[in-house]
Length: 380
Image 1 (cartoon, rainbow, N blue to C red):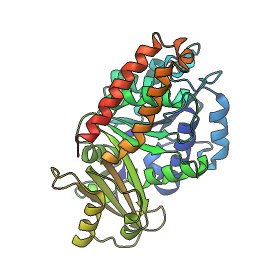
Image 2 (image 1 turned 180 degrees about the vertical axis):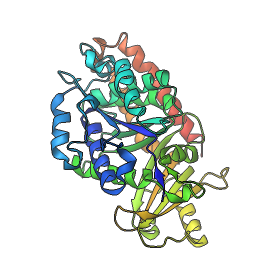
Image 3 (image 1 turned 30 degrees about the vertical axis):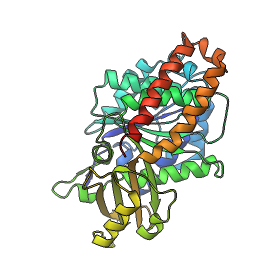
Image 4 (image 1 turned 90 degrees about the horizontal axis):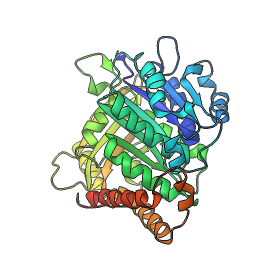
């Protein structure tokens, strides 16, 4: 058996991040409890929101977390961030949400309880004020203060239009793309409820990040799957936006649409229940998956295969994480809509109170964002 070690600390920010993080932790506590909890049974996570009721309702909604979340790991303030990136980033008027204090007082303390603290995984929305703004500020402080090997994000894009979401996503992504080693990117669907989205994302994360025994053939140390995922899928600096897909088997996965385009690198995680034997994929299966991903010509080995036969999360599954030009389909609408708003001077007054020269800040963010899109397009 593996000696499982949780080497990353989960930081849940804003309403979306708290709900998503709680769903993921509930999954992991049912499947691999030692991955996300310490010797006392407390989860290795920090919950941050600008409104106390979000964190309180999260603990009530998820029975698996009751008694496992110390009060010291929950940081709340007195009021929301008004769906405003600049307000969340500045944390104006709330000392409790000072990013530097959060890093030093909470994240560092929880990280010191890990056997090997190598990184932080931030879960948050890119559309709201707390998730996008405070999430960006926290990422900067983690990178500056902790000097970790790994800074990763699990981010959710909004599918429904609200007045400020395009500015918020633009400002957050333009900065995070240069900070993060890896960003697992998801998008809300107008056809699915928030609960269904959280369940889907949490399931993908659990299947990707649970200990995978094929990675540790010569030792009993596990728990560093996120770092391995980053190493495999993010070979180019600044181009680290990953999408995921999951199914029960390869034929089902190959029916997922739309297909990726010009994939730089991917990881395929095959899991089977405890007690059942897992077989390495056949050559024909590897060829079918490679054709589905349409990899770039300069990577002769675009897919890493991980296998685990001790999965406690149900039946067999195949989960795919890939770094592909397809992510541009999600980025272009943000660039287009935010550029139209900026050209008209729309909603700038919401940001000017907290962000000096908001127009110039948004213009620079637009340039960085267009560079990100161009970087992905150049990978073809």
